[in-house]
Structure formats: C-alpha cells, structure tokens
Image (cartoon, rainbow, N blue to C red):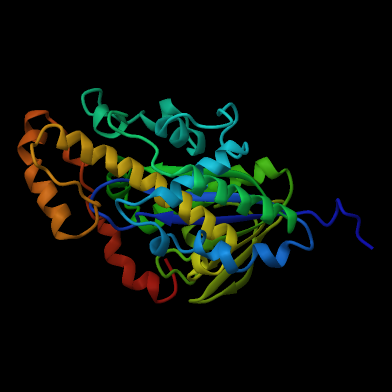
Length: 337
C-alpha cells in the first residue's frame, strides 16, 4: 500500500494566449499543482458544477474589456504564494500582480526596450483592479475546495513575448508556433525544478504539430521516448523530468490548463490595455483595441501612425510581422514541424 507521501504527484497545465494578434504580446502560462492520488482525476478533467462557471476556456469566460474573472484567479493565486519568490503575498497594484506571475524579472522584460519606447508597454498610468471582492472570495473558496479534493495549486508563471521578441524570432526563422512551443518548454523546466520531482505536464496543442521532436528548443538534446503522436494528442517521456502531453482543446478538458489560460488571458489583456491607454492619451477620441485582426484594431493602427512616427517608435516594437517560417504551416499541420 502506497504511503500518503509517495502518492503525491505534480501536474502542470500550460496554455498560450495571443498567438495570432497584430498587437500586444503573446503570453504563455503554466500552473503547477500538487495532487494526491484521490485528486488526480479532478485535476485531469474539465471543471464541473459551480466551478465551471468561473474556470474553463478563457475565450468563453474572459473577454476584451471584461477581465475581472481572469484578474480574480491571478490575484487569488498570488495571494496564496503561487507567484515568484519574493513577490508580496497580495499584490497591491496591477503592475505588482503582473510581475508576481512573470517568469522573467523586470530587467529581463525590459532588456529589448529602447528608453523612449518603454512607456508604451510599461506605464502604469490609469490602470486599476476591477474584480469585486465578492468574486475574489468566490475564487478563494474554489481554491479551498480543490485543495480539499487533493489538488493544491503551488505556482503560476507567465512568459511574456512582446512584439519586438516575436519579430526578432521571425527574423531568426522561428514562427510564432515555435516561439510558443519553446516558451512552454521553458516553463515546464522552471516549474519542474520548483516541484523537485518528475511532473506530468499537459499543454495545448501547438500549431497542429503531430510530431514535436525536431522542433524542441530548451528540451532539445535531452533523451526522450515517444509515447504517441497524432493530431489530437502527442506525448513524450523525459527521464528525470516526466511526461509532457500536447492535447487538442486541453483548455476545455484539463483543470490546470484552464487555470493557466485564465491567468494568461488576464495578463495579455492588461498589457494590451497599457498600449491602448498610452496612445489614447495622445490621440483625442481614440478607441481602445483588442489587438486582434478586426476593424477596430486596424483603425487604431492607422490613427496612431503619426504619433508613432513623431515619437520614433520602431514598428518592431508596435506591430507583429509574420515570420517567413509561417509559410511552412501547411507542412506542420500535415504531421511534422
């Protein structure tokens, strides 16, 4: 009979937000959970009952302009010590919250920012929390109930890839799908180190890949075994690290992936709002934009052109450019990167 200690396992859920927009960052987020044998089934399925009203596919529950639910999950997790080492127990501002969950520190996040551009993405002017206390309490109770069922959330981290990093990757021949995959790998390695044990990681499917081996970045060079490779699921075993599975629609079928998606959606929207507010202060009557491929975003890009030119904002720091490597997507979706 296994002891209570040996029955503890670690699960990671990873998902991306903002893979295809024109503006704003791509955010890849991972959630680490400490799971008992009894809680394993709960952690590996979609949220049920009342929890499903607050936790699930972020595309359905969090919208541009209404991010309170994503904010509530992010704040609740940080308040329980799931943020970076040294992060305050409860974030007192949006900026504090964002840096509590960011994988990289402040200096690393700003490393590519020209001094005169930094305010576009990092100004805190005009931002504030929007989640009501009632919602924060509800999410806190959700986390308590999960812990009672054997699913304790240990850590959450988001990797932020701004337009500049995405464009640099494109020039280096790395399309957005590779950047997404490599960010997922880095997060799994980071949280696996925090766990101090082998992990079981579930990630959203990346770019329709069927086979991931030749596309690995941070995991390249490591010994691994192929468990399965297909359109719906691809899984690999890494000795000493654990198992990594890439699963289609996992944000709608795996609790930890859903939680990662909720946090990532909030982080991306908060950062995109900074860009919008920055230019709204300079262009009277300018509407905010989601950053996606829609008429409002196109109008936003056009309306800010003169301001950006006058301020010498590099295009690379504002709008994403499609990587030439994206032309290979058809080959990727047919079975390999």
